[in-house]
Image (spheres, helix red, strand yellow):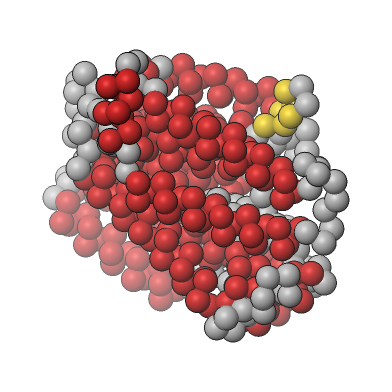
Length: 409
């Protein structure tokens, strides 16, 4: 690696992406300091100072990952995936955490391997789906990607961490679509879930049944295959009441409070109600940094992790909320453009997988703070406190910047 190579490498760096990420991280630090400053004590013992330290490590990791040859990630994708799977298993067996086994202690630090699996899964899927020997029209194309996704999802689900398990599938489907897997195959996979959800209402279920018939007709599949898909989906829908009644009462309440928070204002609906109050009280310009009553009187739970966006709304107001959303949108649009213009298929798949990962985290986190989605515990990139997640986020940026550089030879 001579000086000319370094000069060429940095000339290919996308400054817009780096700028947006640094601005988001900077705003996140300001909000985190406000959310934790009155309770944390001790230099580098507070959440704020730890976040700065992890941010420095993350930025260093981003630079190193960017400087590595893209060929390295392509050739070692499966090994990286296998190593992280082993770490997930070890975490499940020997991990620590309050009521869970999500963290694995390495000396004086704790890491959360499920975060690094997000990067490992993107690399493994990108390598498999970019193979020139792959018959993309064969149904068998789905087997390996699903195995690669289900294995870590099943392990993480046992920790338990449902939110992260869902992230793996949020990565899978956009990458399958980007690899030109026939849309009918994706429909076959997603249709059963939609059938179960729509079956709670007769009208929505009837409409969905009509949609299934239309899609099967347009796909021009054989009568036998079409009939099997239709009967299977309808049967799943009819079993939905049985599945609902099999849930415990508190599980049913958590789902119902998504549609009516007043059903459990002191339990499942409490976090969301306090979050909505915080965001709504911020108005146009916010209450001011350090002046949020919901935040500093501790009405808002998990204010420095899962619900940190509520602090943005309360203390910085609608203007900064729009700015943050705009920055995330610009970042996602830019990454999608780079995926379209990628120099090789592997790079395009990594870029779209990374964009899907960020989109899912941002959408679910913000939606749950305003009551549009159930609370899943997914953090907000570059804002929420957490060393492993922040390290993964910066590493992801470095990987995507790398994929916008030289072509794999």
